Image (cartoon, rainbow, N blue to C red; front, side, top):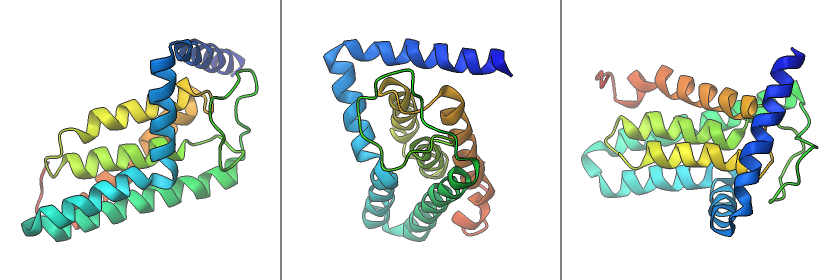
Length: 170
């Protein structure tokens, strides 16, 4: 386990070093801010519901899945209670002091799966950028982000049948 912890720390340090470029740091900070509490993804889902009236119910259900995934990550975080990384200087303040799993990554991955199934092609790459940004700003270990992304994707995938009203969209 020590080898995995060491790799987690080294990967985080390497990605955090990317923030020496002010443009990278600014982009990572912005993603961190708009992703707080899943806000970007919830707003995107509501915008989809407002603009895609024929699939309004699917968009609203996808938004609910995204919110549910975010809430699940907060529950896991309270159980695991892993401290945030202490070996790098964070670029942003965090709401909580626990790191595992990344709630930003959870809601991003849930939105990527749910909204991606509805044809929102920009969401998956933006979600990936959100996940990487948590490492660049130095507030999560890579394993936190991976676990959060897995939780979010699994939550949305498990709810896909409900989201589409019983129609299978892959």
